[in-house]
Length: 484
Image (cartoon, rainbow, N blue to C red; front, side, top):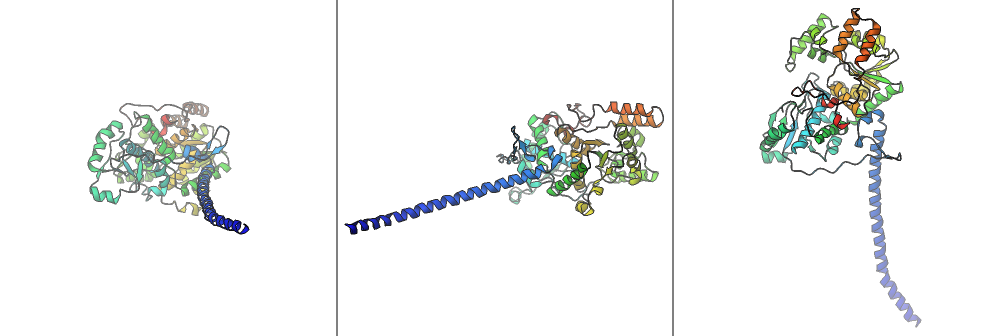
């Protein structure tokens, strides 16, 4: 009987052995799967935390972005990671849009926002924009040298498909014929749908060789206006190298206290283009005139400087700027960052401004030579540093309402209506002349200057619309009120 029981037990052990092995195999398989899942989740969390951390330490400059660019804070005060990119939008593309941006950094920036919006409107595939290399600045930078191209593509993938180049297989299949053309300036939705879209259906690839101000300021659907803002404030991030150095500049300035960013647009190209020569020697005025004639796209050649100035069409000189800053109650202890390139006339023209405000700084004086060396001879990359500092400043003051002044103003409105003094140059030169010729004393001059600018400090307001005169109305990117 005992032998029989042992025999039965042996048989049971033999039967259970494969079952135990299979159970062990299942347990092992589950553990492996769980490990893979956990490690994947951990990797994602690390990536998100790095993204969060990089935007958190960016300080005030990161305030110009929303959702994807700074951590979200719930009602209970817990900081959340930025949301992931949305899934790509699925649509049948009507063709490829190539664009060559013209002008300086900020003119090109606005153009990129417009071209993304056009691509979305017409269901196109956008090729990463080409930047201007032939203008006065002769900057050889490509898009990826200034902007984070991967972020640009991924952050907009739920709106428009963006590729680095037209695929070769598409060219082989459809031929290499590309229509090259500039779209009409200040055009609305109807123009692009009725006149441009049929061209894509015919040619498949269209190259816009000019992109400045090719989309109207007003009259566009709300979703398109908001897309322009999304591109500008979320999708167009600078490269990590530019971001890091720009943030360092802001930290250096903030460690010394509040600061004013002065966009002193008294630079050679602006003076030549505008024909403004006040304060220049005869030799300098002649040099500027020769430059104006040398560049064919600067159409107006014969310009009377004083007429321009009286119309408010000239940038303030450094000497005029010093006078206005004092009238606006800035004192000698004010820290001023000059957000500009080389001032025409050099230190000779800055002497009066320095005497009134000794705490003047520039990126060249705040950073070591080797830190700036990689950006030398790349005017757009240098302008990107000034752009970041201007957006992050306590007060922004442009002496001319060019593209940088307008885009920084818009960023500061978007950031919560940060203070920007929008100088009324026409009124100011009139007051300056009256004060300097003894017509009005200093106290009345100060009172008049302050009164003129009471409502010109970047407060909330609607854009001024002038029908059929888009150049004279308020610029969309200076006050994108639909997005505020």
